[in-house]
Structures are given as C-alpha cells and as structure tokens.
Image 1 (cartoon, one colour):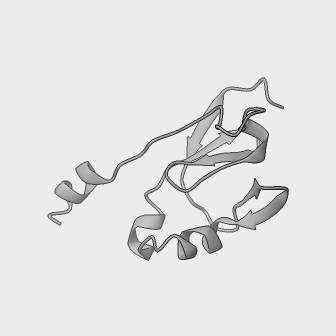
Image 2 (cartoon, rainbow, N blue to C red):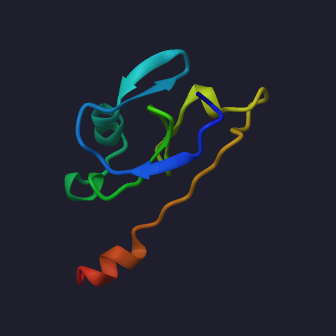
Length: 88
C-alpha cells in the first residue's frame, strides 16, 4: 500500500514499527531514547496506509528506507514551540 498519501497521527498505544528486519514497539523505542513520558504523545507518527513508517527524530521504517545506507525519508520534528506555549 505504498501508493497512498502519508498521514500524520499521534499515539494511541500499541504501535509498532519495522526496524532492521524486526518489529519493534514504539513504547520501547521511546523509553530507550530517553524521551520523557509527557512528550511521547506529542510526537507525530507518520503512516503510509496502515503502516507506521516514521517517527521524527526516533525511527524510520525499513519500508521507506532507500537501497543505500541513507533513508529515503527524513522527517524532522521539534518541540521548541510547544515547550514555549507550555511555559517551559
């Protein structure tokens, strides 16, 4: 289903992503990346059809990587603006 337009959604729980031939839980990736729990629900998740293909700053799925070592898709996300709005 790679011909569908990418969609942005936010966490609902139970998400997984295909990395280096293995399916990984998003929760585990967030914990391993030391992302504070209060920021995890605010990171956009990029889907292609029903597949989670990218989590900006965290992971890019095998399905959207290019043939070479560099990914074909490199999403970037910053929480700077939302931190300012929260008064942090």
